[in-house]
Structures are given as structure tokens and as C-alpha cells.
Image 1 (cartoon, rainbow, N blue to C red):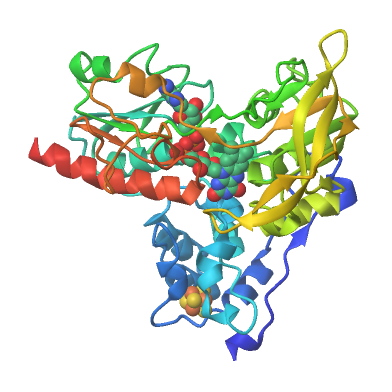
Image 2 (spheres, rainbow, N blue to C red):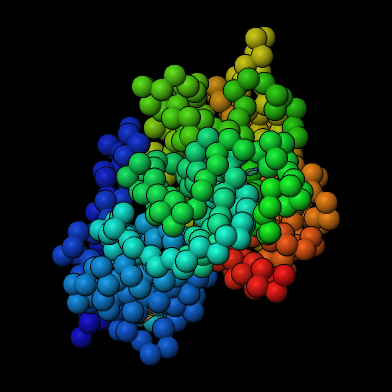
Length: 459
Ligand code: FAD
Ligand code: SF4
């Protein structure tokens, strides 16, 4: 019986070794391991895994091809629904999506869907040959080259549209390039190739163009002949705690810290853009971004503390990320909340003043709210403080575009299909939902592509 085979474990770099390098943590499956794991799938008639995938990837179909040894066939099935499988196979929260719903997980271990997707994508990287309809000459602009923008642009280009992506930074990829660290998502080995696939569909990517400054959505539509626009500009504006001392040198937002490491390669000796992390770093927050910032600072040689106001049970980060962080030696200071950053006479951080917390009554989210313990103030000596408290969309685009509404969280108002309050302008991904996930952003980009196609056929 296929389901009697235990889930095939995946090989990883030794925690002590990987804590000192930026090489990928997980090695993934080899062919033999992937085929064995694929043979565990029951090819369910009503596949719950597929319903739980935000882009409806045809999971049992691709796994069945793989189990037969037909890797190219498996890749073709995946390509019908996903333009970034090597990325998604690595960073999707499978435990709460496809794998969380796999029937084998009820009594045992679910099929390792993410690792199988990654194997197929890696084995066929750069070999995809998507079908593209004849060019129709209709121009569509896409703002932002993150997963939402790339997915929207890919679909529109496959249907014959003349698509240009405008990206503010000097490299395409959005958070995949500047946020998620190299040790979870290798840039040259993986991301570069998946972006190349998008370019192969004749999508033009113009980098160093800030929409709202270099050009505006109004100028693109009124003067440059773009018939529709998709906004996939993400949620890159960091939040701070608004406590005293946050302006001292050595306080970073997680966004800045990660961007300087990933996009500007601060960790590489051959780059002239280093970063000073110091001997001790405190990361404030408990989400995935906090784990990424902490594990990056560790690899730069620091002793790293995660400072979080609730307990381990409430950590919002993926279990796998917390497990990896603990294995690598990150220290977790739980039930601890910063109240002040203390600086020295030269204006550099020297300590983080905190209070101890205890859990009180549940709040509206159902989680018990942390309350300060009176008289429990103490200082953690540190050279660097990284605030990983969440992000919201940058208001630049909504402020410079006529007729675009935002909600009270600063997110663009859009229908489920992605139509904003301005005709011809569509939006999706973090710019609409606030910080979410890669696959949800991709799904939103694809849904909006369909809506743009329908809009352009009517107008
Ligand atoms: P983004 O990826 O943010 O892309 C938006 C792009 O638009 C950027 O390139 C930006 O430069 C560009 N842009 C913004 N404004 C303008 C403008 N005015 N003009 C031109 N271009 C502009 N999700 C997961 O599923 N798994 C993970 O493991 C995971 N880890 C994460 C780790 C970190 C550190 C962060 C920050 C996020 C993580 N996420 C993860 C969340 C995920 O990356 C995002 O939800 C996803 O990238 C959102 O995609 P997007 O296309 O909407 O926006
Ligand atoms: Fe295979 Fe699990 Fe999906 Fe069933 S639910 S088709 S066993 S991956």
C-alpha cells in the first residue's frame, strides 16, 4: 500500500555549519527520493490538497506524472497554474495549505507536496516552453515585479498582450529578491531563472522606475497608450514601535536590514555595501520576517535574541522557521517587550530596555493579551535593534493616481477580481491585502489578469 511508506525525510545542512554561511539550508530531494515520495500519493478522487492550494495547482496530476518518472510531464502540469514553482516549493506555508489538507496527514504524515514541487521545478529550471498567443498589440502596464506582478504579467503575455513591468528597485522579484534570504531562496540558482521564464514570454521589465515619481499611472494611461494597469506594489512600508530612542544609529527596520543583505549583498566580501550588525543583535517581533532577520544577523557573526511579547505558543512564524532558528542558536526572550532604545554619547545603540510581560485576558483575536509586569524593567546590552513588526503599503501610488481609494489600513480597495475604484486599473497581492504570502499574491495576480482580459475585450 502506497500510504504505508513513511514520508521521505529531506536532507538539510548541519545547523552548526549553516549558521556561518548563506548557502541554502534545505538540499531538497534527489530523483530517487522524489519518486519514492511521489509513490505515497493516493491520487484521491476528491483531492483535498488541491482545494487548499490558493492557485489550484493540480497536485495529484503532477505527482502521478512524477511517480511514473515523467519529470517533464509533471513540470508541464505545474506550469498550467504556477509561474514560480521553484520559489513556491521552497517558501509556501504548505503545512497550512496543501499538506495541511492531505488525507494522509489525518493518521500519519502528509505527502511532501512542497518538496516534490521543488524537485520538479529545479530539475526543469529554464526548460519550460509555454505557449504564447499571437501578439495583439494591446499595452498593459504592471507596477511591481513581485509574485503578484510577475504572475499577472505572465498570464497576460501568454494571451498575446504587450506587457511592461515597471519596478522601483534595480532588480526584479519584489520580496523574493530583497526580503527572503539567500539561505531560504537562492537568487542566482533559482529566482533569476524563474524571472527569466517570465521575460521569455516577451514581458518587458523596466527597473529603476518609481511609479508615482518617474512616471504616474495617469501618465502611463493618458500619454503612453497603456489600456490597463495592474498594481502589485506590495506592502513595503515598515512599522515602528514609537518608543524613545528608535532614531539611534543601529536601529533598523527588518525591511532595511534584509534589503541591505539580500539586494545589496552586504554579506558578500566582494560587494562594497557592507552592514554593521555588531556582536549582539536584538530582533523585535515573532513572525517570519523576524526569523529571517535574526537568522541573517546570526550568519553575519552576531549573538541574536528574538524579543517577543507573548510566548512560543503564540509565535506567528512558521513552525519550520522557528525550529530552524532554534537549531541554529537564536536565543528567544519570550514575554518581553521593549520600552526604550538606549544610546551612547555618540548616538549609537548600546542597550534595549524591556519589561517582562504576562498573559492576561483574550483580546478580539482570541489570543491572550500580554500585560506588563510592574517594576520588571531590565536592559539587554546590544549593538543593533531590528524592528520586525509588520508592514503596510506605501501611499505613493494612491496619492499620485486619480480615483484610487484606500482603506483605513492604507491598502488599495479592490474587488475579488482585482478591479480598483478607477476603471482600467486593477490591483492584487500585498498592496490590497496587506502583508500576506507569495502564493496568495500570485493567485491575486492571476485573477486580476483574467479580469483585465475581460475588461479589455469589452472596452
Ligand atoms: P512584493 O513582493 O512586495 O513586490 C512588490 C514590488 O513592487 C517590489 O519589487 C517593489 O519594489 C515594487 N514597487 C513598490 N512600489 C513601487 C512603485 N511605486 N513603483 C514601481 N515599483 C514599485 N511569503 C511566503 O509565502 N513564504 C515565506 O516564506 C515568506 N517570507 C517572507 C519573508 C520576508 C522577509 C518578507 C518581507 C515577506 C515574506 N513573505 C513570505 C511574504 C511574501 O513575500 C509577500 O506576501 C509577497 O512577496 C507579496 O507579493 P507582492 O507581489 O504583492 O509584493
Ligand atoms: Fe495525494 Fe494527499 Fe492530494 Fe490525496 S490529498 S491526492 S494523497 S497529495
